[in-house]
Length: 216
Image 1: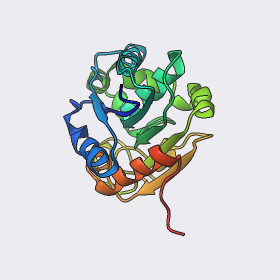
Image 2: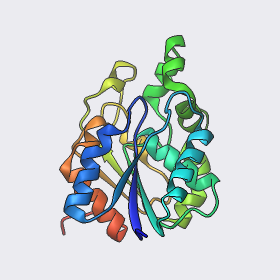
Image 3: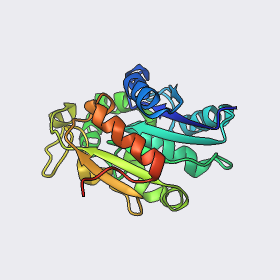
Image 4: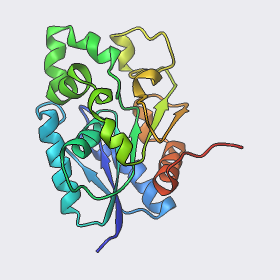
């Protein structure tokens, strides 16, 4: 039995294959075993996708399971931990996840065509009731770290004007959650978070020790 593994959870509109590079970095450079979880990010509801993830985690048979979620994937990960009992221990890293809502998604949702492409999970877990409203117990029970991007280049700027640091899709302030074990900002846009070697190294550091790397 593999004792420890990392599950990678993609964001909205993505197939999961984009998580392959960060998975490879953690396996090759940091000796983790990685698995990619794919889910219907638009058609599935938040709780349906959380249950799918929980079944995937529990089906791994691993004694310790870490989760790395990009964007909506981080919200789905926290929802699974908040709603499904008996999940194995492990740390969570959210990459650019809108844990306190999303201005860009809110503005897109105001367009009739926008509602359909945002889908159920984002509507329920970001707009209707953000993780900041229901993930408190998860934050208390396990180490959760967030990496936020500060390179303001992304599709979110087509729908919203940001007045603070952001990754082009999600504002840094929208990634913060009271009680997080650690939070760090890096020079990356939203999509680039899953392709950056530096982000992968920081993710590995948090999974191993519960805090990100900082110069002293």
